[in-house]
Each structure stands twice: as C-alpha cells, then as structure tokens.
Image (cartoon, rainbow, N blue to C red; front, side):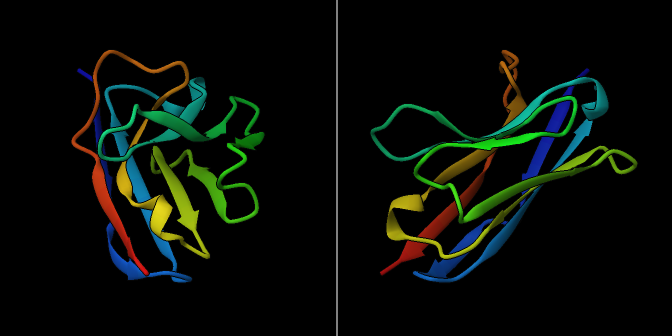
Length: 114
C-alpha cells in the first residue's frame, strides 16, 4: 500500500525559505519519476517540480531559479527547497509520482505573507 507523507510547510514572509519533505512507503522512489505539485484555493493542481529516474530536474517557469527538487534514495524521501518565496506560492503542496498515482497524500500547507 503506497503512502506519501508530506511535511515542512508553514507560514513564512515573502522572501523567506522552506524545505518540504515527502516520505514514501510502499513504493521505491528510485524506480519512479517524482514530482511536487501544488493546489492554490480555487485553482487546479499543478506540477511545479519534477525529477526523473535519472535524477534530472525540471521546473515550472513560475518557480524556476527559486525551487530545487532533490531526493534521498536511501531514505526513500523527496525534498523541495523553496527560496525567495512569494505570496503567489501559497498553496497546499503534494508529492506524487509523475504521472501521478490515483492516491494522494494529505499535503502540506505553505502560506507566504506579503
């Protein structure tokens, strides 16, 4: 049974940083392309950062240069370092496979104040 547990969100001022973690169980992140998605109120969920099986990273234009995705295969964990945060980054952040599984974790709330 797959479980994805996101953590590390919180309230931060614009310009600040947060590091999100996603602990996976029931699946091996080594064998999957993984990504971080976010969903802001009233908007569709979007993929903002992905990492391929070869561990090449790619980013949405809105976060390029500010967010960094990484993974630790030994811990079966995916990370998202978020720097220079903006109020428009406010959303619930989720990790999942790319393309996504039907299952989603609970996500972690990120709120950026201006």
